[in-house]
Image (tube, rainbow, N blue to C red; front, side, top):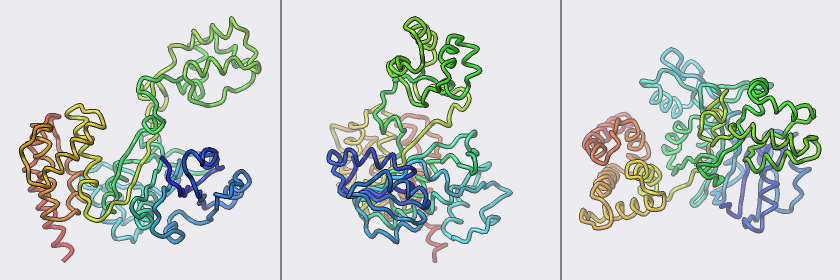
Length: 406
């Protein structure tokens, strides 16, 4: 749900803003700021958006905190961060070789490089997260959408510039270092698309030669000389599109084409949805929330809810309720319960004890990353078996951190 104040970073031609402002009464939007580095794009946005609720800022996205103070609205960014600077790091090419002077980014890059065969370090996106951490004040939120990383888009060339698919685990880890609560959602979750919903394959638009060989009747469509708009068509939507007179299809040819293309509709998570680039279409949303100081349960909640959903097979609402109840019981020192499992309380208790002893830093900087890296066998007992190791590793890590800081 949008808040009354919205800042959009990198507004493009103003499509997101235009659609949001068209429903401003429903969303309760009182002000909408378009923030862009491009004078020409900002000019196009001004032409298309004449609402009294809109204003415009021309500046680099890494300077956004200069324009807003203690922002409690929502910051949006759709498809912009892939354009920011990313650098390739491995054992032979370190961050030092790029002349990066930022000590904190250098430290984070070295942590990620340990044991890694090589990866793209999203230095521009990480600096943007730092700006957002400075900008936001509880309950301020940021929603950042971009393509997920894959081997095929690391990076990709777009006419006159490279764009780099985003490793959302990397951004999530860094955001937590900045005391931000993090959630990552697939675009299908954001839009409420059912898991089984099927769409026409991307091959319809990107591999026309192959499709023509496999579905000869599609030539009837292409003979019209009119391109089918690139959209996510369900079977119903595609059938409706083909009824347009401009394609010149009579009823018989239209029904034959729909019949022949029926096997070419797939769900978004089916690799056949895009046989050429089976992962590059994966679009995700990074949701960041500014937390009140010391709110360890809110910081831990997204990851622990994910654990409960994966290991115990709980639906989202039940997983959230279980985590909140178990963390409440852990805070009170209670190990007896009737509504939740002992495992929930043990996990919450260990986290609570660590945070109480060492401070919120232990969760944001360490626990989640280490929990994800441990090879858990997928059962509550498997995770519980690692808790002593987690505690020892966390204590040792904090000891080394304090020695370094001293």
